[in-house]
Amino acid sequence: MAPQPADDGESGSPAVTVQAIEGLNALSRDAWDALANPADAEFDPFLSWDFLEALEASGCVGEESGWLPRHLVATRPDGKLVGALPLYAKTHSMGEYVFDHAWADAYERAGGQYYPKLLSAIPFTPATGRRVLADSAAMRRALAQTACELTERWGCSGWHVNFPDTKTACELDETGLLARVDRQFIWSNRDYADYDAFLADLSSRKRKALRKERAAAQDGIEIEHLTGDSLQPEHWDVFYACYQETGSRKWGYPYLNRAFFDLVHQRMPDRVLLVMAKKEGRYIAAALNLIGSHALYGRYWGKLDDHPFLHFELCYHQAIDAAIARGLSRVEAGAQGEHKLARGYRPREVRSAHYIANPGFRDAIAQYLDQERTAVRTDIRLQDAESPFRRDKTS
Image (cartoon, rainbow, N blue to C red; front, side, top):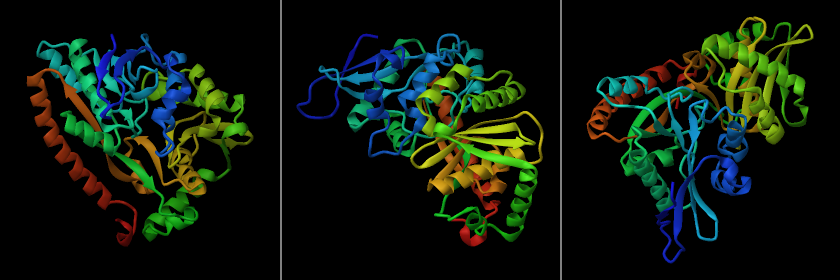
């Protein structure tokens, strides 16, 4: 793509050009991270150059996987990066956690070609965060408008933005993208001193049930929290075997290869929390989390042997323990999973935004989304009413 002029909204500032690049290795780590994780914002490990470029360098993202990097970058004449938009050309809808398969089917049955489409998201990661990266609101608008223009210029059916934070979602609404709502189950830390303090917020019956569940899960099990220098290759060997077992059983194949996890270990071990379970001296299960400045993000789990309630213990209870110990405000345990509700994770809205190039299809999707938003928000209210919290602790 030839560089395109853009207005960064600052009177008298030098001209800015926006262009697409085919990989983050074209940018310096520091330049990207200055936009992705500025000092005054919540640190998002998934937006970091280390994480995103590891996906590309390992081949998890690329032509073979159907995720073609086409990141938009805005630069001044002196080469300074002032805006960026993670962007992928997709030839399928896998690994997104915002499901548009029915849209693709309807579009193609009507004679259209849904793929390729453009997507701004963190590959294989349903975590909410910033998506249009710039200090200036005008620059963010320019990047969004450029993505819409490129959708049509490149013959794509649409541009989709998955899991934007509230500020980004509102700005994309103003740009004219269609708003979609879904839910995730998120645990919130109310300045708890420990897990027992969290349990005190629950009803007596639920409190007893979780204590019983944890006792059964920990019976005969040794649990380790590994991060930074304590992470060793043998731990990753076990985790990857667990990850492959879960991936092959649930989805047909794992999205991520060992080379990706090796790069994560090399680049950002202090942002990794690996919770591992050992029985009779042998590791039998593992759960991988990434650590942000405000949140613990649960990502992958797997087991080599069965043990009662071990999934709930490693993925949800131990994550709460870790978040409390680190003073983190929440645990985001990934997509779906109504079983999280009984364990203190409450339903919360998550968003996506969609630019549909074809006007007729856009109108049809808009009508569908109006109905879907109402239904999802009703479900969230009903589910939240069933939370294990005492009635005086449900706000």
